[in-house]
Length: 353
Image (cartoon, rainbow, N blue to C red; front, side, top):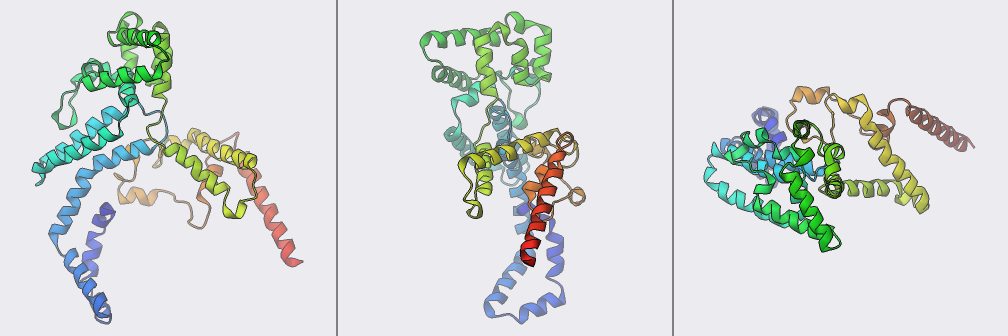
């Protein structure tokens, strides 16, 4: 909201100096005139705009992290590192701000919130991501000037992993076996010491890497693939509930559970199939539900104007599902359009009768 307000600053400052605007305000009642004067003083106050710019600047990393967490896909191995980077980015932004002395309070608020939300799986996912052990990655500069540490050198991460192993396993023997295999992985013994394995740890997805090189520690590889495949929020489940509410509405409450489940299943899978379309792989909406770096936060007004938006009067979800599926699924659109045309003809006959 504040970013949109900043983009309209010039238009707002131009509007309040128009004679027509001032004359319209004079014709209003006392309360409206008082509110108009307050709005005018606010628009003309440079301190207000500088404060809005400060808020937009240092909340941008937080917004990007929330956008990342709200998306679908396997992200359990990324959240721990991204949280540290987010705090570092805020520190870098506030270093050049007049509120540099307030960073300690901001950091305390963020860390306190993180302590309430974090679970042992966050630490385990971070420790099972092979690219976080790469020497080049550990030596790369970090936001905020912090020093990167391998997961096995972070006490909090190690304690979280031990707690997660205790909850995952059924007995002490299985937990001991997981710890032993975890040690082999962290110390890069056997197959993990191969140059190919260390190179692919940086270039491959973590789940694919475990599928290829996890034969030496099969139990740990099985746990790693399950943990790293987890989302980090309930947003995906809530989207399914939202879809169910759309399908089984007050006007369609005679649908039985089996039919509603099938419709939700079809709707959700059509959205998944849409990820194989060209518009999802490239263009202004590329990976719109996964990659927060491509959100409208950084898009210029010219790029936003070039984006093709669906009409407001149409059903957005239905059009999206039917139009972005490429062959051989294009027949879905044809069949749906035929059904709609048949329904329209049926309604016309009833009205004539």
